[in-house]
Length: 136
Image (cartoon, rainbow, N blue to C red; front, side, top):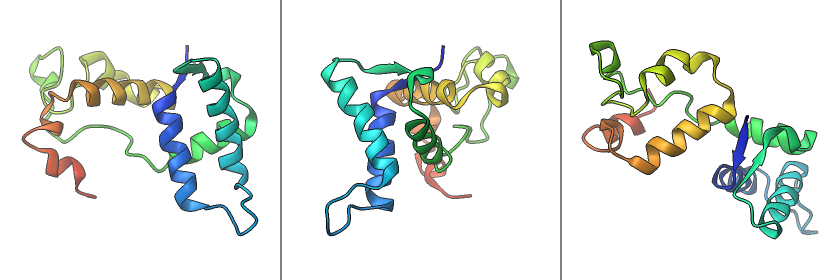
C-alpha cells in the first residue's frame, strides 16, 4: 500500500513555503494550505504515515508537484547488484528495488529513499557523497 510519511510531507511543505510564500494578507498558497491541513490532521492523530489514497486531490497534486522536483533514482553509477550483491554498495537499494525502480510508485520510491538515507551506509552517503550532490 502506498503511504506518505510525515517527513516527506514536511519537505513538500517547506518546498511550497519557498516557492509560494504567504502574501501580505498572510494567505497560504493553495498547495501549501492543502498540505498543511493534512499535516495538522496527522499531528493531531499522532500518525507518521497516511495512506496515499486518503489524500485530498489538492494535497495529492501538491505533493506530486514537489516530488517532481526531487531526484528520482539514488544511483551514483556504481552498481554492485550487477556484480551479484543483494544490496548495492553504491546507492543502498536491494537488487529487487534496482530492478523494479521504473515500476515503483512515487510513494514507494520515497520509502526506499528514506530507508537508504536513514541507513547512510551506501557510497552515495560516504565516499561519493559529492558525486550524489552534483547536478549532472
